[in-house]
Figure 1 (cartoon, rainbow, N blue to C red):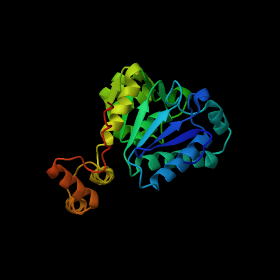
Figure 2 (cartoon, helix red, strand yellow):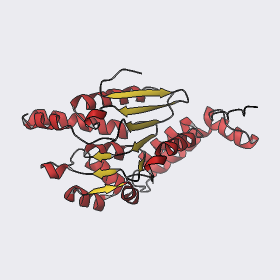
Figure 3 (cartoon, helix red, strand yellow):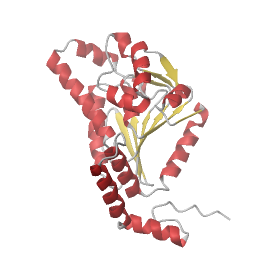
Figure 4 (tube, rainbow, N blue to C red):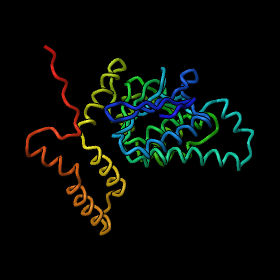
Length: 270
């Protein structure tokens, strides 16, 4: 996988990738280069049908402290059109992550401020250390969480987003779980062990079925029943039943054996 200056993109032989934010000396704060590199990395991941899922993580103590202060100072000296270009670049990143075909899991430790909540909200799932600190901090410096707001609202609801966007209060992993921003939170010392359990669980699932299910749920949106959605659901199950993985999964279930996509259990040593 490509070399980056602000990221690490690491493939795992089990068939997934981890995208590391890799500016630990800057607490993984965003700048223009990181945003561009994230877009490039997501384009590469999108084009790789062999990958089963993606983890997004931050090197060092923090997931991401939000926007880089030096980059924000530079932005303050730019005109409207140049700032608009920057906003469009950030929006492209968020939409690219939200539309990623494979499942995505954010793993959060330390600080997750500002735009970092956008990344977390764009992932299908997120887990966190219970002492992680989350904050929609933009109003403290005279800004607004504009580009990330649609995704944060989807993740934790309009009412909660209003509160935390307007107060800039910090909240921990336990509260993030209560709000629905993260699926689970764990003691910090157990986070790595829990990441491996999430990986093991995802590896049990049909790679094709996870992608199809993600596309299906995106199409369903708010769940409103319409004739078009009914036809989409009918066509989806018919197609996946006759697919290679669909057939293999059904045969394996009937034969009471693991399907071919599941990792083989390690043989016990004598």
